[in-house]
Length: 130
Image (cartoon, rainbow, N blue to C red; front, side):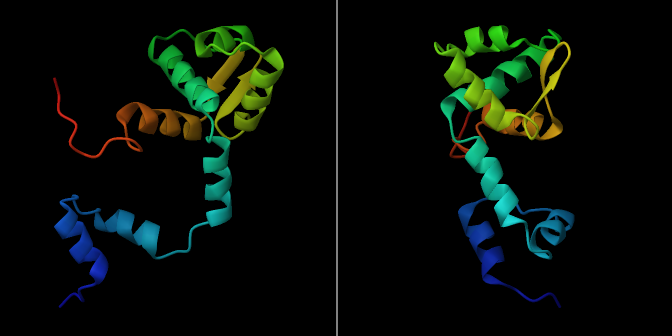
């Protein structure tokens, strides 16, 4: 018989769908790298940086290809090139990658942009299709 724990009760009472067992095992059996996770969230702690990820995701979706510094800056609406360059540097390597053709999302950047676009961090779970 499986042992019950407080976490299972919270999931059931909250109405959240259960996490698949294989995710539970991955997420809870090993200690996560909180330092790396904290750095990742810190890198995303700016509306400008989140907007960069969203714009690059839209460019990928529209098959627009890599975006130049100037294209992203214009789409994001940043007035200062120096300030925008700072924000782009905070994302470079982990969330975006500079190629000879321009900037593209990394796999982590793609997942972060998808989470933002899906409302993962802002939706209360009651979103309804209209």
